[in-house]
Image 1 (cartoon, one colour):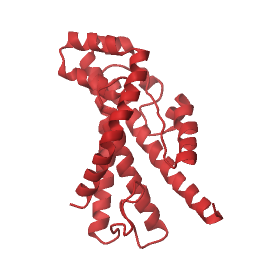
Image 2 (tube, helix red, strand yellow):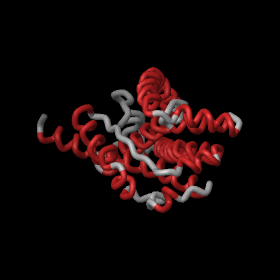
Image 3 (spheres, rainbow, N blue to C red):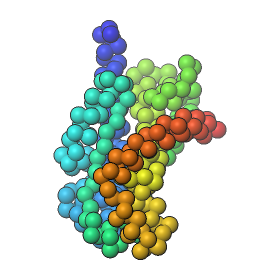
Length: 234
């Protein structure tokens, strides 16, 4: 790797990490805010009803710092996780409120996806951005003739769009421990949702759920990517 390649990789990594922090901060902050509105002050007291990433970095340094950096260095792709604390007894007493709290995280990612899409479409309509001549990539949904700020903004918005889109949809898969597993209880009676939650909140099921989610998502992520491009340029 030449010096120029290394500098480009580092610059791209900074943009990746900024977007990653935005995505998880909005996601977990939305969980915390929805829980507060629903009567659970656990995350609020932990300082997580905020758009600052610091409480999330402090709570999950492994998933928000170490793993994202290592995954980018070794694979060119950034993965990680964060979490917001909640009161299990509150969830048991108010399963519907917990369901809405679970939906709040993916909803926050949907808002960031929509914001990125609006900015990208606006840039395309005004000629500031153009379709990439050498093909679409996760980090290159558009390109800019400006080699400085314009190119950085094109990359930033491309990552912002795709990362939040994929993160939001991934978390909606109805398997533990993902948000969709709790959100799906909104379709059940309160008593059934309590039984479902008690049954699925199991470490073994969580491990199985993550493996199943990765398998399923690996099959549908390409379709999501294709649809996103089609909608962006429709």
